Each structure stands twice: as structure tokens, then as C-alpha cells.
Image (tube, rainbow over all chains, first blue to last red):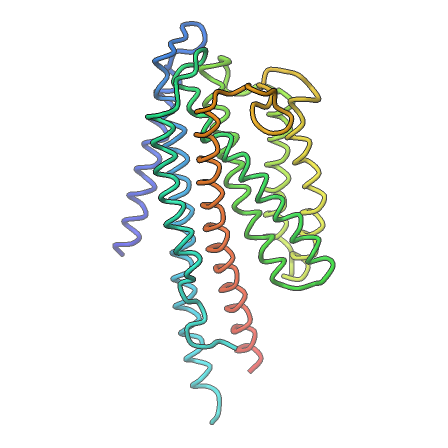
Amino acid sequence: MFRNRFQWVIVGATSVWLISTGVVLGNESTTDDFNREGNLSFLFAVYILTWAAFFAYMFYINRRQRDLKKEIEELKKMLEKETPP
Amino acid sequence: MVTENQFPADPIRVVLLFLSGILMFISLWLIFMWAPMEQVMGQVQRIFYFHVPIAWVGFLAFSVVFFSSILYLWKGERHWDALGHSAAEIGVLFTTLMVISGAVWAKPVWGVWWTWDPRLTTSLILWLLYAGYLMLRAYSPTNAQAARYSAVLGVIAFVDVPIVYFAVSWWRNIHPEMVVGPLAESGALEGSMVTTLLVSLAAFTVLFGYMLLERFSLRNMEDTLGSIKSQKGGM
């Protein structure tokens, strides 16, 4: 129950972040008024997006590993019970 | 047969995780605190230190897919298929990030998110080919068919990797030429920038090694589960 709610919080927060980043980037200055010191939001968007993607992927892999491990153990116990001595 | 402790925490994975963490920390320090600001593009050029290593890891992942696919087709051993599958998934993740980081860099510098430049177009084709590889696996009726068909595609799709790499030399367009590597002009990049890039490349390569081992382990678990289920069904 908590895990499902936690997943929705992560999905919601990521969506809000992506939308807000898109809005900010859409309004950013481009080559017309190029500012060498500015445009930092583009730089941070790339770094945050990259790390968010890595963490999300590793989170998915680790959770799936944990679930499969549990399922394998349960099936193994069932097989041991079903196998005649 | 499933045995106790079949999936222990591999010490190599732990070492790779710590090493990639340390290298990433050093790399971030070099990128933001040490590397000088590029004269024309300014601060946004620092995307380069993520964009290039991400692209490199994407190519590395697809090279692993290529060699694993050849070995699977030759020897028919399941672990080559598992390795190719794992590398393809990570390669697609990195190629997606390469395309996105390139688009975010292009907007302030070129004024557009996307343009049909040969490097960009061939990169998109690369992404589509390997996304197709994953879809082919997902929709194949049997595991054996998924392994065989995707191994063939893994060999064919790799043809696009050198095309992406050489696209900037073959068809000059808006994407900058190579600044590192054998085809780059000497002195195209300032010394401290080269050092920063190399540390970042090392950090991402180690991270790729860690991710590949984790994904490979997951794939082995999936195969083990499949064999237990078929064993159970046969009882």
C-alpha cells in the first residue's frame, strides 16, 4: 500500500518537474540574445534529467530483482513440498 | 536447479558501484569547478562533458550487443543472448539520453531543439533500430525465437554505429566535428577540457559496467523463474 502510494508520488513529482522544466526551457533565451553566463537552466536540465533517468532505471532493476528473488524462493518451497520424498 | 544463495551480491558489482560513485564525484567537480568556460557557447557548453560520454557508452553497449549476437548465433549459448539483451536495454537508455541532451544543448546554441543534420538523423535511426530490437524481443512468440531474431537484428543494426560516428566527417553540416579521438584536429580542445572529458568518460564507462552486471543478473533471475515455472507445470 505504502509502496504504491510512494510510486505515485515519484511519478507525480517527476511529471511536475518535467512540465515545469519544459515551460522554463521554452521561455529561455536562445541565439537571438545569447548570454554566455546565462542558459544555466539548459545545463541543469540535462544533468538532472540524466541522473533522474539513471536512478529511475536502477530503482526499477533493483525492485524487480527483489520481487523475482521472492517469487523464486516461494516457488522453490512449493516444489519441495510437492515433490514426493 | 535452484540452490541456496544463487543470487549473492556480487563483489565486482559493489566495487564498480563505489568506483563509479567516486569517479562521478571527481568528474562533477572537474566539470563545474575546474574546466574553463568555453569562449563562444559559455556555461551551456558544459553539457558536452555528459553528452559525449553518454554517446560513447551507447556505442559501447551496442558493440557488446553486436559481439554477443555473433557469439549467440555461432555457439547458441543462452548467456550470450542474455548479455546482448541486457546491453541493448542499457544502450537504448543511454542513446535516449544522448538525443535528449543533444536537443537541450542545441536549443540555446542553434536556436532549435532539432534539425535534420546527418549526425542527428543517423543517431535517431540508431535509437529506432535498438528500440525495434527490444520490441522484437518483447513480441516474439517464444524465447528461442526472440533470441534468434534479435541476434540477427543486433548484428545488422550495428552497421549504423560507425555511420553515426563518421557522419560529421562524411557530410559536413551544423553538428561540430570531432574534438577528441584519432580523427580530431590536434589541439581542438584545451588540455584541461580533455582531462575533464576523459575522467567523465571513465566514470560513465564504469557506471555502464555496473548497470550491465545488474541487468544481466536480473535477466538470469527471469530465466531461472521461467525454468522453475516450466518444471512446476511439467509435474
